[in-house]
Length: 254
Image 1 (cartoon, helix red, strand yellow):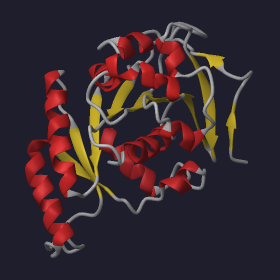
Image 2 (image 1 turned 180 degrees about the vertical axis):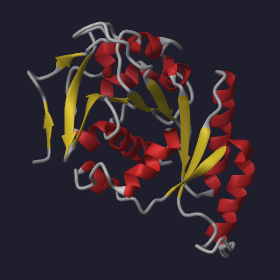
Image 3 (image 1 turned 180 degrees about the horizontal axis):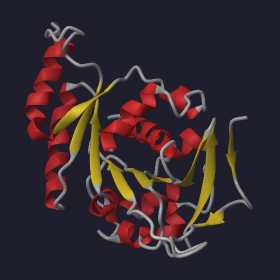
Image 4 (image 1 turned 135 degrees about the horizontal axis):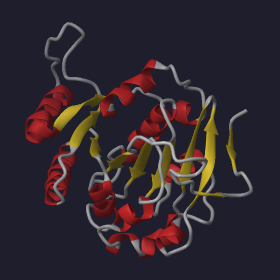
């Protein structure tokens, strides 16, 4: 059965010391960002969440007032990230998809009133007393406010982008914004490599544009994620932990 579980509605965030004083490994915090809207941020975040949930305890945070990630996995509702940033105790819901489960902090439209002016260390403060193996933050199409705060507390910043002329300038702008907070972003193109299986260059507009984008992004270009991966199937729980598609995403942040 595919479902979202709400144990007692919501539950309090657990800390590293609960249940004993055993040493825990540092959690890895991942920020998914791009100034451009419609660039594949939520697509990438959703696949990363499911990929890492098969590897360790994972917390998904929807930082976008549009709530796209929330809609992928559950229903919008309170409490949400807005409430936690406004001072109430942090709580999560548990989401189950097939054999996978992870915890989530939802977003709703109220976040729109504060996300653009959020203080730089707000997300770091929010997460300072919790422990997961992985925290994945899906950010809105901006480099300011909550995106800046997520990037500052992140160990890894990923910039997904679609293959489009209109993509290049916003990605370059996002790179500069991440450099301002001392982060080196990793850019992934959502699309196919401009070479065939034998390694020969493909011909045509899309292949030429892809090569142009790779050149423009320079040292920040990290690779490709195939658009062919059906995020809807994964979100629906059809994709299982051992799926090679999920392995592709795990390797990107290992």
